View 1 (cartoon, helix red, strand yellow):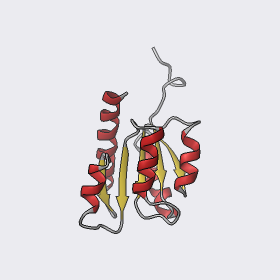
View 2 (cartoon, rainbow, N blue to C red):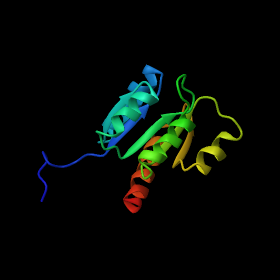
View 3 (cartoon, rainbow, N blue to C red):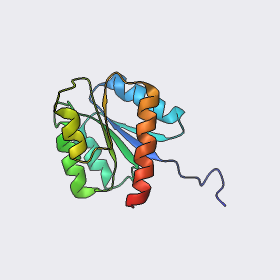
View 4 (cartoon, helix red, strand yellow):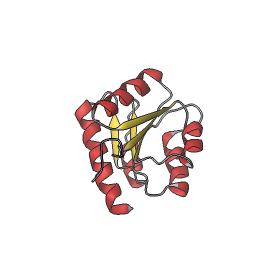
Length: 132
């Protein structure tokens, strides 16, 4: 039996160049009982992937250094079972289809309701149990 100090919480990575979005999403994840790690750049997140186990990544599509699609491709090479939720404030007609075709668990358009993101996280975590 696990004691409260040994219970492992799911770790959610939040990758967004907008600090207010990172803060809000991290707080939401923590309020739902997840551990959240926030990153302001895709490169910073990728560097941490080797030393930190993540259970899900929430990734903004439009970022200056590398877009969310490119980050998702790189993740497939190093952590193929890591579920990715892509988010964007700039919904493009082909964006949703491209996101889902490249393996994203969900594609959410900002602003989205909190429960929509939490539902996508639950879906991602259930799916990752079957992939591991």
